[in-house]
Image 1 (cartoon, helix red, strand yellow):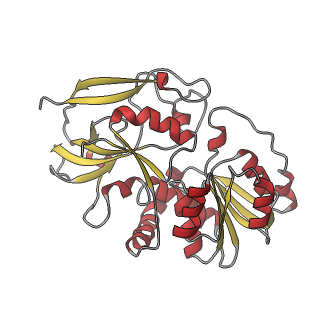
Image 2 (cartoon, rainbow, N blue to C red):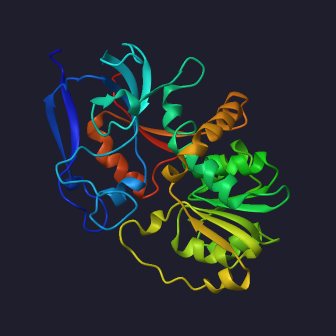
Image 3 (cartoon, one colour):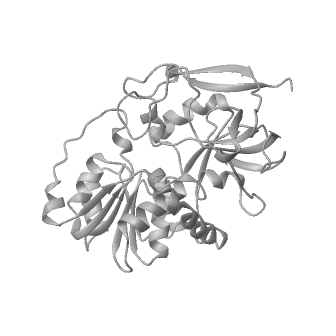
Length: 334
């Protein structure tokens, strides 16, 4: 093959918000698979908020990326060459091949996916890591009961939208928090939530209070900062909080929480989690999500950037909340 492999590398660590200068784009020869390995041409790359944390060298749940390393990320694509008996050329596969047009992986690190009935890209969203993240946080930590009030922040995003719809499917009264009229309209009119608070409308505290007249029993938290603080003040006794993310603070900005006493006064259960700690739950999560998706009970949106060179700009936009739904990069030409 004469084609080159395009890669995006971590050039330097961000100081504050991520910038284009934190990345470098290089062309390298196509990788050659060894024994038991598979060469994959990536069709889609997933962009996710956790990537911001991996770009720093601060202590975290995962090893920081090394400078000069290919940016990490989930991918779906097509097998080009296989030295593994479980894969053949033409198979569609999901893996963790990062920001590059081609990648090599051990067969154990890939799994075949079926895109005959659902879009290939859905395996990076509702049927991928974001879907499992939503399911685990909602079902295993929040444990909503029919009739309870569940609030999901970043409700139009890749994880929040799935968590919110699962809560609705399981009989909860669901309130979303999202940024902008269009996102709130999607959350209510297409996802079927009971209400949506537009945090950009300038009435955050009164709007949250009006949307949760019976208080909040379960909070699925993706944002942190002022929104999280205000919702802590709306929690009911013995409420449950799944802390999935804190995207408002990923650039190092702090926020002085004022309502943490609610955790004691209301005897709240608050748990942060990382979905990779729950790999044993993924099969059940994806089985349920696939059934809901096939039956039309789950709606989702995608923001798609085109071409690997667009990935840095798309990640910067994601971290600013500019995406609508799951942020993807399409790597193959139309």
